[in-house]
Length: 169
Image 1 (cartoon, rainbow, N blue to C red):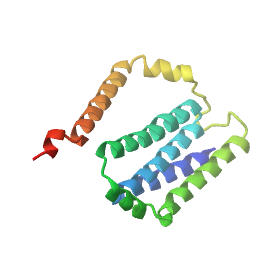
Image 2 (tube, rainbow, N blue to C red; image 1 turned 180 degrees about the vertical axis):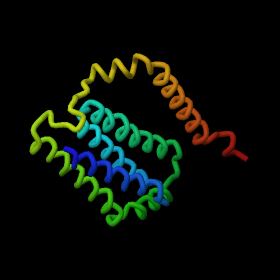
Image 3 (cartoon, rainbow, N blue to C red; image 1 turned 120 degrees about the horizontal axis):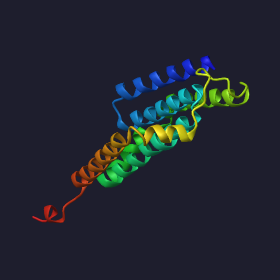
Image 4 (cartoon, helix red, strand yellow; image 1 turned 135 degrees about the horizontal axis):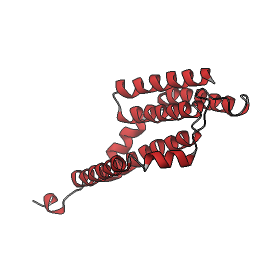
């Protein structure tokens, strides 16, 4: 299990470097998703399967939905569709696909080859403990983060919309 932890951490660091050094936002997004999946594997290897599942559902899923919303709000037209086709050539998928395959192999190894309960931290964190800690002393921080995300969404909509009166001369 220690190997799974260090290997996942290495994949997360490599994918994050791909996010930082990527010049294309679509490629950076692909590496960001791989990085988030690798961090969820770190949680799984530490004995926190609920936190790992939340990482996948909330972060990897929410990042994809947010990206789709941004694309829909910008409404760039047919020129951007052709540009995305050139960005997403089959060669671009090699890096993220390879890292995803490695993480999938590691997940299958951890789930089926290692006896259950053999974690690095020797404890398992259940859903109730996460909820008690998240909505107990950190309730204000969680609510402030949600308000900040809501303000960012409203600002993105306001900046991305097309005004009808601006289109007429």
